[in-house]
Length: 281
Image 1 (cartoon, rainbow, N blue to C red):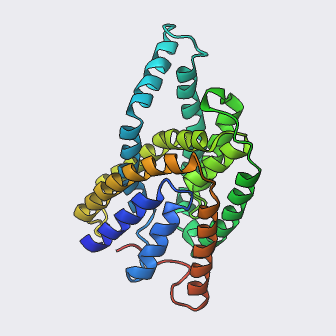
Image 2 (image 1 turned 180 degrees about the horizontal axis):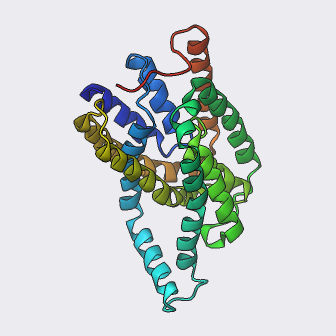
Image 3 (image 1 turned 90 degrees about the vertical axis):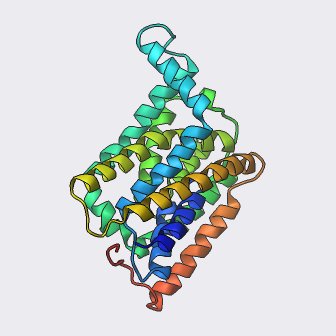
């Protein structure tokens, strides 16, 4: 992977990670269409996502410190277990279990079979329709203070759907939140917080694997560049998205998902790009 390719992929990752349009799908599509038919791969995606999640860590730093503090205090009886922040800490932990377990069980399929672009097209379009319907029917009443254990688990299951390129981590969790009656901004905020353990675990796991058994194709300089670019852009996107969804629906994102799915389907049908990508180079 060259420097220019890393720069472009970093921009794409930063722009799409928190929007409900699937960053993994865009990374795969851009890599294949513009860079010689090569999919950067699940490992590259996992590592550069460390940049986007660091943006979440900084943006929500005060909230995260407060949640961790109250959660820790509740363990030793210095804070009530029903404290909203302590409960949020447990909910994030519990909600991270489904994606962690499924990610390990289906690691080989995630890094190979599920990266078939026909699957990506189906998920982009199909889940775009799902999000649009849910958003149209959503009550937009609940706040994060009202989140229940049951809802926390359902959020976690929805996040696990993001293991399939084209679904979107934020799309899955936000859609689940809206379906359960949460306000758009509340659903987005919890989506950001819930992603932290899973993405950091995945990113550092892939990083450790690469350090232990280095691939000759790994270009660390470009990977670092992509990660830094992801971080800078993602920080701005978080700020923009939270303001946008407080007054707008997700319809525009749904239309975009269906449109990009149609474009990729045409490219596949005409043979411009293959459904099964070449290995990253």
